[in-house]
Image (cartoon, rainbow, N blue to C red):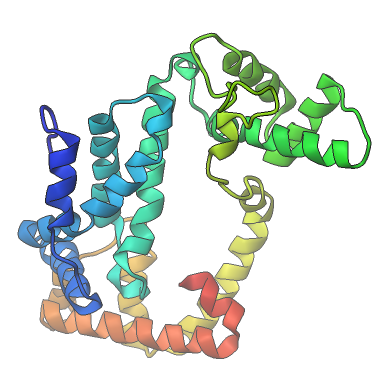
Length: 292
């Protein structure tokens, strides 16, 4: 959706008038786009959640980017979410789309902010959105213990907290101290006033996924094998070909091989995932919540 020349207020009004999708309609549109590449279904799905994209874009206005640019990036994230959304996972599209919208907006901020234009690695992105907030919290905790942290100790603690190398913390501190960035300014003339950076949303833990990735992959593989054992041979074949290949096969190609219609293959695929979901849920609540 091209937004050049479009007033963000008028776009917001238009988004607010868009239809609200119930779960059944949303699922039908998602299947129509995934399986049949129905562009009208895609348009309805994206339009219905433009209000979500606009709401998230507005949270990043403090960085000084034009609202239209933020909305356009949010819309790109929304379209990426629609492209990758799997309706068989059993989650609402809005829940899935939030991550893609936020990632698209944050990448735009990182690419266009003058201080970090020279790079936007994952560690730099993490620091850019979290460094001052984490530093302020560590300082408050140290003060509560009656400790005084020097700059080197503070940088080491930030490095461990955010999960990035120490030299990245030192580099980002220099960039954030630049005169073209005002997030360190207080919200009032009082010296004790809160800095604007402290109002940023907490992005949560940054290093747990990396530390636990191998363990999670091994566990996931065990759960998947167990869930697949609940399927018959044809269902296992469909799941493998549709979801476990680097180059997933289409419903039509599987239908031709199995002598079934494309719709019948889709029904068998959905039934297989239903069996797997029940199997995972029966194993434990933790296993089921991991997959959904």
